[in-house]
Length: 278
Image (tube, rainbow, N blue to C red; front, top):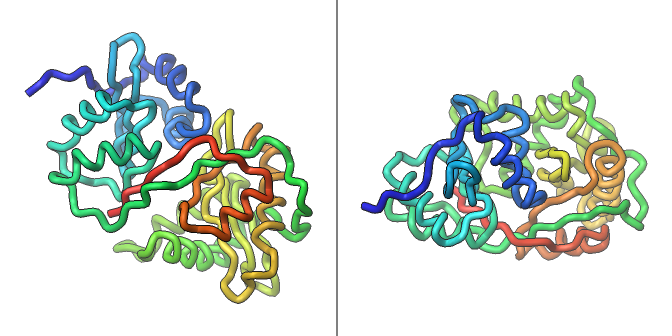
């Protein structure tokens, strides 16, 4: 077996890691937020591995509930795959730049397969300027006392998007905790009409470079009436004003209605993600 230059990174590597992540300000957002908030010390929720020299890793791999490569070429992908293939799969997904994720999964499938689904082409989009379209004036930040109101909408969104319920073995306590965390941080938005969540979205990831939107959803009975574009216009305007210099997201290539919405809002493509779901 080849001895490959992969090692677990520690707090002493933080400056080098941050330089690497800064080279991918949009694509690396999910990993960059974890590093910024929790550092690189011992962590129960995952590890960060580096490929390359001790002084400056060329690529990194976050491995936890989600596995995400950043900056990984074919050699780094092969090295990361060799390292983690001997470990039991604990992640629910592989997410990141499409070439790296799909290459990683080709090598990991014999040990970690089968997958539930592979979404091989998810355009990575970004916008830097407020949309020219009108924003919905009734879309606002969700209040802490409204978590129980928005939670069912979040469950419906997740189930529709991912294909399984997020409630799991704990009856949804973990997922509700995440919803409540985003609400408390002022990163959850909704239009609520007579106790019904008509539109919702969250800034699921925030770094100094970007606010990444996830969980965009319109109640099925309210679809086709422009709430998605007006609601997202409100979210983008507030995020650019209050949170980060850009707003980003990734979308399934087959989701034509959503892609039209984002195009009208001024989003442009800067890359492509892929997601492997288990």
